[in-house]
Length: 511
Image (cartoon, rainbow, N blue to C red; front, side, top):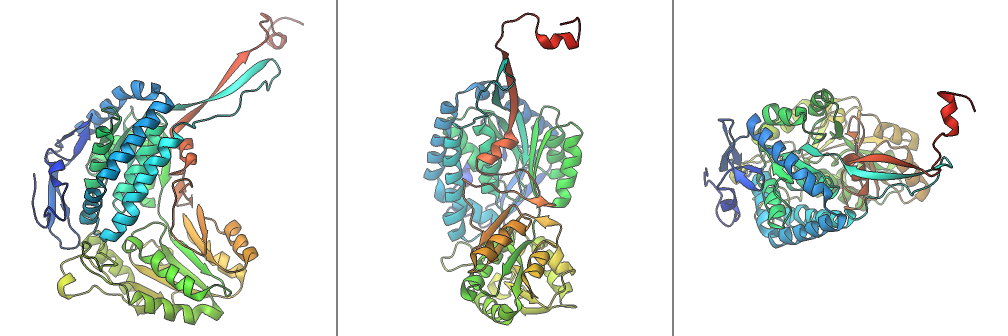
């Protein structure tokens, strides 16, 4: 069922692809059976653009059954066959790039320039990477480690994967979950966030249209409490991968461990941005604005805590605030828009609450409000810079997930690194310095899964993404992700052809 709202053909050219429902099971779209409906809302206007029936537990069961049925054939395909299918998949998605970019902007509020130049091409590149990586599932070389036996390692797919993706990067997160799983020979059921299912469904349709067999990729769009928990706890699901908040991640772990399944968690972040006193101030200020505001700050690796060595502190605050004030808020589909809305009014109000509470103990240098006028209907919030907060304050320690950057001073290098590590999270960080030894020390001592030097945010398919501490464990992207999606099997052959081996005497008889 459709509610046109702002879903004009220009904004939503792919809308007819969703006429049959928002569940993609065994190669076709169907309607959910929960008996409840949900609306995808354009956060720039508040208008409903697509209404669909949510998945219930029966839909999850059907999707898992389809994945289980498809597993023997897909897992026994050669690496070359899986690679060829993924190459075709990349080509199909590239042909549909503009439709996918517009759907992503519509459901998320991302500026079209971001989805066109980051989300969609990055996803196509992910497919191309895993098309190549599918041919390189290698283990340790064979060898005679005992002297009397030859040992070698097999990497084998786990089975049916049940994954849950968040709403902030629905297309990229679908790719990060689906691609390593199927490249390794698994089949998958993905539950996207019910707020943003459109591009996950387009992604699955493109996979099927590229010739990936029915049932290899399945999508169930429902709530976390119903569809998500049933998927994670399903006895036929062998592995779960979850990206989202640390709080929900703990619940996923509880459900998953009841059936002793493999678990991969990519959770919250509170990335430090450490600026030493020899840094290029202009580069650091530009990097801070870009790193803090990407996707309206709804990014677990976004720069959220800038620690600036005291000689540069005042100048950094002044320059960063000035740059933030040049950022253009507007319609995500307008050419001049830099920053779109947050995902919803609920999220906008949550972000505003953090900032409003911080006024009691810190200074809002710029921003700190929702715009009025023609943007008032949308979930917009101005880029916000906060100074003067204490290290133990809520605004410094808690994940805000909005366009808010907090700046704090530090004196010596020891203090800067200590403050950078002083949160429960450890997903990403950056260090800014012209001194290679200083920067190298920061990369060693900052506890995070990724540390950039003189930049913040870029990701590449060849390198892993994942965190330390409360940010979770396991890796997305890169060949390292195969560690999550494969079983390692040791195979050992006797080379002696001797019936009674010397070690048998330790069990029975004499030498």
